[in-house]
Amino acid sequence: MPSRTFNQRSLAPWLFLAPGLLMFIVYVIWPIGESLMLSLYDWDGLYNREGEFTGRFIGLDNFRELATDQAFLVSLYNNVIWLGMYMLAVPAGLLVAIFLNQNVRGIRLYKSLFFFPFVISQVVVGLIFSWFYAPNFGLLYLILEWFTGSGVAILAEERYVTYGIIVAGLWPQIAYVMILYLTGLNNVAPDQVEAARLDGAKGWRMLWYVILPQLRPATFIAVVVTVIGALRSFDLVSIMTAGGPFGSSRVLSYYMYEQALSEYGYRMGYGAAIAVVLFAIMMIFISGFIWKMWRDETER
Image 1 (tube, rainbow, N blue to C red):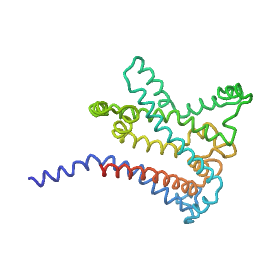
Image 2: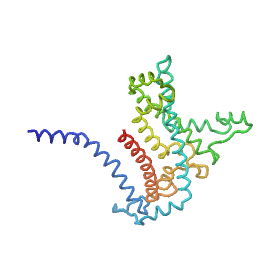
Image 3: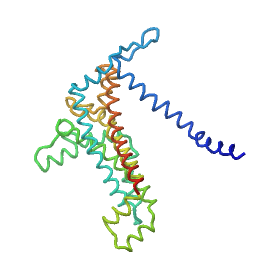
Image 4: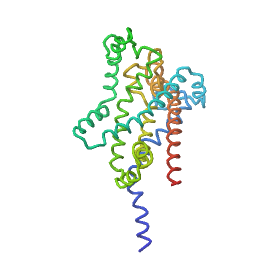
């Protein structure tokens, strides 16, 4: 009887996990494997009349071509800029969450205003900032024209276009990180805060030594979703510039779409190779952060 009870207890967690694991395998692991395999082929996405796969195996040729593809290198460089600037959403979201985590009159109204960017569509965000940057009538253009005598068409300048799109993306991303930190701040132990105050801790010392250690789970999620958001930045680029001007605002996800599905190519294998590179970059950053979190937890 004890052994039977032990078997039931050991089996029960796997029964609960089975539906989720099955969906994870079907919708995540399997597509990743298919993309890896497809990146080794030259394929236009079509099957013959008998429904047979018509791709031609070319090995690593797609990856060799990527190494000399100037458009790919520009997209990769832009993704690096996206990643670097997007990480500003984490400290900015934390500061906004700390500001909103207080009991004062009207704080619910402020929370609603800061929460608003998160609930609207990325397409709407892109349109709003396209109008904000627009030459001749855009608010930013008119402000620059008022102070300097000449406005700047942000989305038409190769030097500024990527930064303009990133600023548009940071608006809802900061709101998302703010929500994560607000949830984490609600779980901060008040007795530790009071004890720190009795010891004379306040301001930045209170934040660094008392609050932030308790916000590690929220920080982990915030960093992961921010890295993923930076590297999969497709919708804003598509809405605001379609990769222009002259391909200067392309990112890897948009270039992958251009090569695999747009009128430029139907090169499914080449698009899959770009997807593999993008996935590898994501895994490097996320795995590194997970390893650091695990090391910090085991050393405590």
